[in-house]
Length: 204
Image (cartoon, rainbow, N blue to C red; front, top):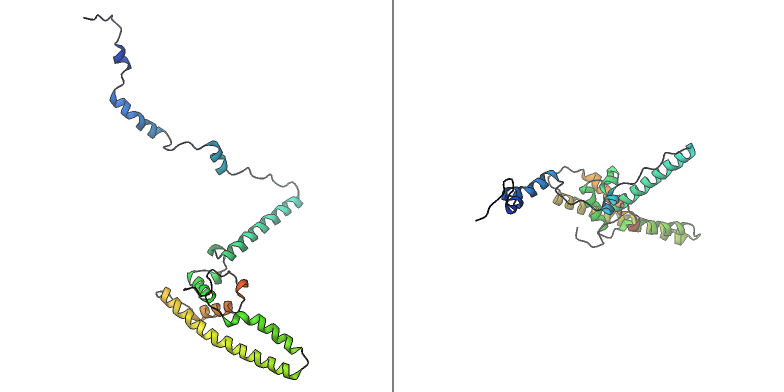
């Protein structure tokens, strides 16, 4: 038989925590905490933007900084336009329909792509003081324009067919889309802007 002095409690009873309190501990931590681990100092500093640059002290420095910012924005705009990103493209090149027309043109070999080369040959032929060469030059120029006209007809039909297949429920200005495709087809492939995104022969 054990005797307990008044005012003393059993150590086991004093150190025992009720199960309800133990169960509430993670809930309290979750309610009062952030609910996610604290990021490391290096990661937090990496996401934190750097300090703003000091204001310019002279008009010349302010003008120089403004030109640098404008040049940076122009470079970003040109790069975005070359990649075909919608937010950088001019209004005439925006939209999925215009992108489809560009892909149709870029996926085929177009007679108009040789326009600059043939024009250079014709120009050289005009300066040769030989009537026979000049007459042949005129015939070459005429037949080349005829080839461009025939190829443009087939290109226009293909553009109409693809646009109506992909976007049948939308109103389209077919004349504008066909002219947009033909004008792009008359440019050399590497000089097209926005640049070609599909290879020649691709199934668009």
